[in-house]
Image (cartoon, rainbow, N blue to C red; front, side):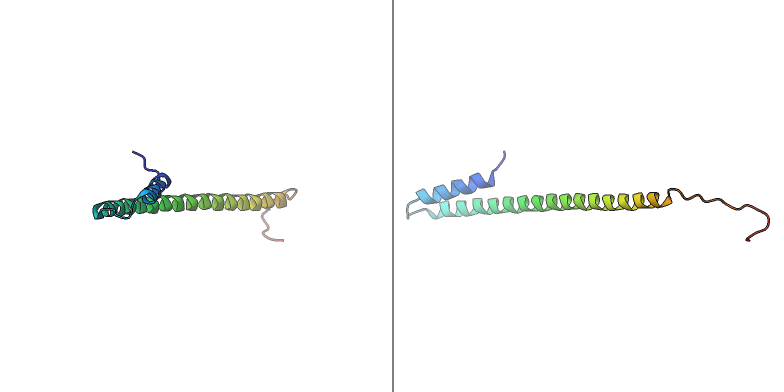
Length: 95
């Protein structure tokens, strides 16, 4: 069973609008318990959304770091073009 927070809160609001002044205490208590359950649902939804946003931010940070690293490596490759390094394996040591 899926509970929609918005629909349930709308149903409670409609119920309150249609009530007369003399509501039994048990109905008020039941409504309070139900609103408490909806509050718990809202907290879980907010936590899930927060986790999702953190994951998205982490993904954006990873993409930014990857882009920066790629640019650095491309700069290193561009600097090395045209340079030839020849090792000196001669007998005389340094000249």
